[in-house]
Length: 265
Image 1 (cartoon, rainbow, N blue to C red):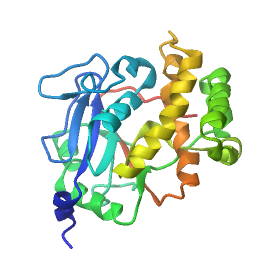
Image 2: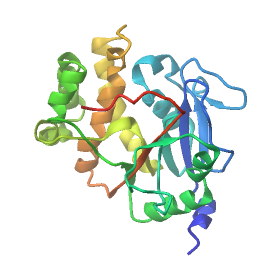
Image 3: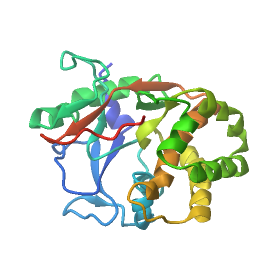
């Protein structure tokens, strides 16, 4: 089978969100740049259109883009990237480490991760997967403890209360927060539309309730607690629904001289 032909039958659209100018992949048929928050760029899709939560972007991070995708698109297979984080679906001699993390931006790198070869590999992976995510991130302790240390205990406590109220079927899986050091970081994925609809319905029932209780914050980092909480939502959700999950490398495409990224500790 020519897996690239699947794009004509079951098209993939990965929305890559940008909140500022940044090197973009060359035009292709499956990665779609999306301007988020207050950012705008001529010719780029904007989350400020249609049914949106663009004003929530300073707090929701990339899940404001996820909300826009959910409410305003119909692609059969859909995904979410960051402006500088992508996933690698094709492992070849380009890789020294199959789970490499950082690559310096270049025309070659941008072309490589948006190529037809990557798209064909993605379709092949989706033939045996319900969900594709970046490799699970390992933290320095239990994921609940790590959140409370790096972020804050209040938003975590409210998250647990609203999770029990709106998604009680996920509560048996809270043991994953208390006794594992694994996090589904970055809010990045590829999944089919029917699972996206279910995921977003469940996720936003909890996140909206948490945000309604705590409200906007002003701290430059802690104000983003809804986005940080949403990263932790997917692990119990995907386990409860027994999805066929495939993990792939997540690559940070950095400009020359960029500082080391803040990583989960």
